[in-house]
Structures are given as C-alpha cells and as structure tokens.
Length: 394
Ligand SMILES: Cc1cc2nc3c(=O)[nH]c(=O)nc-3n(C[C@H](O)[C@H](O)[C@H](O)COP(=O)(O)O)c2cc1C
Image (tube, rainbow, N blue to C red; front, side, top):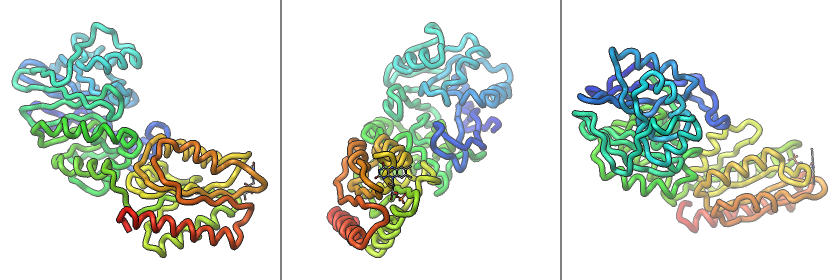
C-alpha cells in the first residue's frame, strides 16, 4: 500500500497484509487484514498515529520515506498491542527526537511489551489536546475496546476520529473508504465478534463519549475508513443491543455418526418450525464464522460425543471459546452420545458460566440414537420454539 492522501496534511501510511491467513493464530482471515498508520503534518509539528505489525514494518518505513525531509515529532500510540505498536522502536530509531504520546496505562504496557525507554514518553490525560500548529489532536480514552489502555484521537480541523481497533475490520483493500459494502461489514463483524464482543458493556459508554465530537470520518487501524460513520456506529449498536435473532447455532462433531443423526434431526425440525439454523462441524468450521453467528443467535446447541470421560476435545475447545467471547445468546441445549458413561454435559454446563443462558433441555444417549432419543429431540425443538416465541422473535 503506498501513501494515500486523506486531507491536506493527513495521509494513510499503513500497510495491507493481503495474505495473512490467521489472526491471533486462531481466526481465519478470508480477506486478509491491514494495519493502518496515519501521518498528520501540521504547520509546526508532525504526528504519526500508530504504526504497523513489525512483520510488515518495511512497508511503513518505505511509505514514510516518500515524504521529503520528514521529521516525526510525535508517535501517538492508541493501543499497546504489537500489530499497532510493534514498529514504534524502529520508528524511534529513524526519528530519535520523536516522543511517544500516550496515556499512563499504555505507557506501562509499551514498556513491558516493547522495552521502550521511559524518557521517550509524553503522558497525556483524557481529553488532553496536542497542537501541531494548524492541526489539533484531542485524546479520548476509550478503555476496553479491547485492552484497558485503548484510546481514540480526534483531529478537530479535519473532523477525523482515529479509533484504532474500535470499528476496525479484517479487510485488506486498496480503497481508502469502506463504501458501506456487505463484505466490509462482514469483515467488521468478524473483527467485532472475536475482539470486541467480550467487552460489549464498555462499547455503549465509549460510543456516547466519542459522539460528543463532530467527526465525518472514522479512521480505524484495521480495514478501510468509514466516511459514513453512522453506518458502522449503528452496526455496533445493533450488535451490542440485547436483542437476539431467531437463529440457532449448532456446534457439533461426531466421530462415528451417532451425534450427527441427532444434529440432522434437530436441523430438520427447527427449520420446519421457521427457525434459521447454522450447523458448524467443528472439524472444519471457520472459527470467525462461528463467532459472527453468535453475535445474533438466540440459541446455541452444543452437540459432541463423549471421549475419555468428557467432551470430545473439539467440543471442549469450542466451549472454552464461546464462554470467552461472551455472546448475548439467551438459550442453550446439550447433546452427547456415549459408549458406556461420562460427564460430557455436566462438563459443558460447568464451563459456560459467562453465558447468561436458560437451559432448554439435554440429551445423553448410548451409541446410536433410538426412537425415544429422536422423540426427545422433538421436545427440545418445541422448547426452543416456545422460548423464541416468548421473546417475540418467532
Ligand atoms: C477415543 C474414544 C474415547 C472414548 N471414550 C469414551 C468414554 O470415556 N466414555 C464413553 O462413554 N464413551 C467413550 N467413547 C465412545 C463414544 O462416546 C461413542 O462411541 C459415541 O457413540 C460416539 O459418538 P459419535 O458417533 O457421535 O462420534 C469413546 C470413543 C472413542 C473413539
């Protein structure tokens, strides 16, 4: 990605990671991602907002070299995670007089993670301003989107709000703006589901905080910028709202097909009853797609066999993940096939403490499901139907 001008004196200097396949070594990236860095050249001082993942730092360096006689005075660090901060040491080498401008918490994390020396920092407080001459930055603390130190930066004269991970999307593109397309929104939802959803409760207060500023562009640190900020803010408000959709997510695996018989039965009966069902075979499912589905789903069904007295390891792993990302799901049900005995359902129930779900039935059956097990499926389906009706989504 070469340098792109956003406004007079404001440039996108970050890089696309077109071929990155996994984020956090776990979430697939069908459309890659980007690490955005923004250069703001004021009449007196120049600031760089965030850097890029160190794996691609040469791209940032080459972009900065396109500016003749550039001197960076301030590196604004909005988030200490390495995909945005990891190239700060290299930029400090290039511009030894530059100072890292950030909050106290971020400073502490940057020292711990990157070993940046104490004397390199200027510590700012919530709503502090920094003048670059004809351009003014205001720092707005937006904690827990998604680390404790995260903050946003408002560029008053150009009405741009830099938000780092907040409103980011996993989407590598040569376009500057998101154009509100479904595909970018999907990338934003993929990002939200893994990274932001666990901190849903902090998002509303952060949106209230930023909305006091008059901005026309949201410039995140992943994916394209939003020149229709309402579009992504409204998407976030929808995702964090307590409202769930008439959808069931089935997380299943089956070694010899026994659990799968029940999953198929559940699928057919739920669909017959007008409920959207998304089954994910844990062997091959894209974890990002599972997380995306859980942003809206009213109900989760955990369905996997018993292995070595507990859940199949893929079942244990997904249970841990779902519990960690804390979806707003309201109902859950549990299915397992076993050979001689085990504790699978008990284990799963004990490991979903973060989910505020009403349990809508469970089915533990030996070997292949029998007639009475199939009948039990109907009971579970009717409970799900009633539950969805009770909250007015069916
Ligand atoms: C490696 C392995 C370990 C198993 N461990 C247990 C166990 O500890 N307790 C049990 O009741 N069944 C155990 N089983 C039996 C399965 O739970 C049983 O065959 C079940 O019906 C498989 O369901 P599926 O066809 O959906 O994979 C084990 C099976 C395998 C392959």
